[in-house]
Length: 333
Image (cartoon, rainbow, N blue to C red):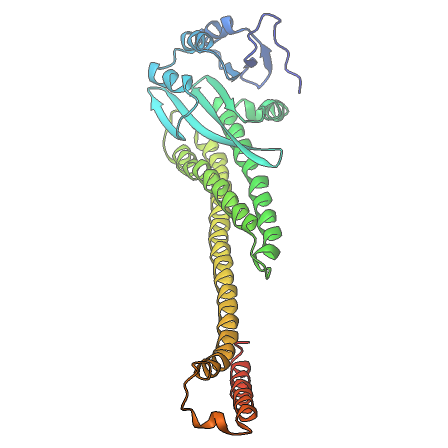
């Protein structure tokens, strides 16, 4: 959907529209927001921003009468996921995730919601919410439910974007399994496992708080979320649980994979040490015997015998052969 904005609109302004009681879209400017809200005719306003500057946020604070603390949080992009109530309005901060060039990039979305307005502020890696608004506008009877339906659509979109990333992590882990069980140790495999676990941990930090946010929207804030909309937020809550469970499962599998890889490396090193010890044992016998007869003592009776050398060689071969059989059966060589 291509959203039409005035040529003089700020670059960070993505969407600015009002929706009537029957769900029809009305194009408005930022300066008209307070005028629309001043008329109690059931019309509500949805504004979308992308990395706005302080001047624009200050203007919107005046238009929507936003709380100072909520606007202060929106000025700073590094917020923990949370939901806070300020009188008759809500401030929600959530983390977004997006796959960029095979890597996961994280961003934030700050949402201000009142009885008759919805303001979304995107920071960092985050897909545009234009498809969300387009879907809502195709269902005007649901848009007529007010800003809470727009909030549901945004949160549902964010959570649904987690799922492909979790599936991609699962595929990467499956690809790494053949390297994990390879006979030779690869440092690169351990690095990939660590990086994958690190990204999963970051994703979990984004997903886990969503359970509390959507849980609160299904239980509390009755003045902001109607009984009918609670069913929708419950659906988002279920999706969040699914993503969180899948993330936890993958993290456990990664931990197990790293442990298995370390155990296999340890076993392989033990086998090498065993074989080295076996061959060292075979070499020790002739070395010990030869050292006795290399000390050049004068009174060694067997040195005078005509067959002493051959007897010594035979005894040495017999001892080494016996050791070889014993070590071979023990699988040390």
